[in-house]
Length: 119
Image (cartoon, rainbow, N blue to C red; front, side, top):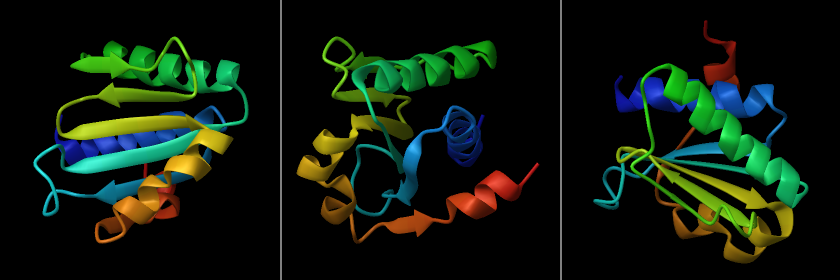
């Protein structure tokens, strides 16, 4: 699966489970860490964990496993590292504090509405 396909699948999974403020940013030209960051948030630690579980489960069903998972125990900020795509799922207040969108503002923000409209 290409990084672009992984982004599309992940955005659709997160949207289907009511993730809030879903953003995908192309950071390939800015860092060696990944090609894309996907950022979303949930309103409770339980929802944040559920979103991470669902992404990991559904992508796992497609044969895609995360290289690393961080932050699951606290449920404030969970990172699912799929090498080319890094998924950040925050508790709302934690996302506001760290403001990754501002940090990666030079990246290309993808239109998630367009992604969700694709079959």
